[in-house]
Length: 112
Image 1 (cartoon, rainbow, N blue to C red):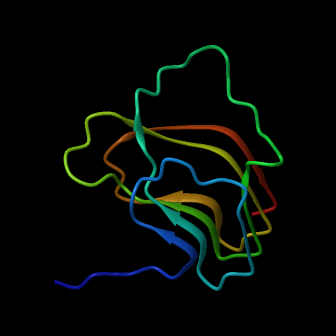
Image 2 (image 1 turned 180 degrees about the vertical axis):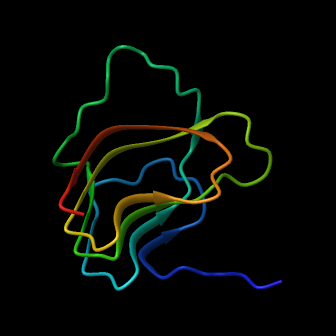
């Protein structure tokens, strides 16, 4: 078996309780490779506000945010929120072979 280990400024293969306010700039791979937390992903009608202080930002990378699938039995939804991706060569947000439902909110994508 051959495993592909993507290069990234931030390579996070575990779910995180809190990861915010980071900037990845000029990565020759992905800015962020991350495994989001599983959630309910039911729209709550409130929305999520994008905060300049807590947003993770990817600029000038090949891919801004590469979202991994969950580990093990995925029974819930995953979410990506509070991110900004601009001037990335191939994509602002990318996921492949995703087995979960995915909710994306409070995201700014520009010129990817």
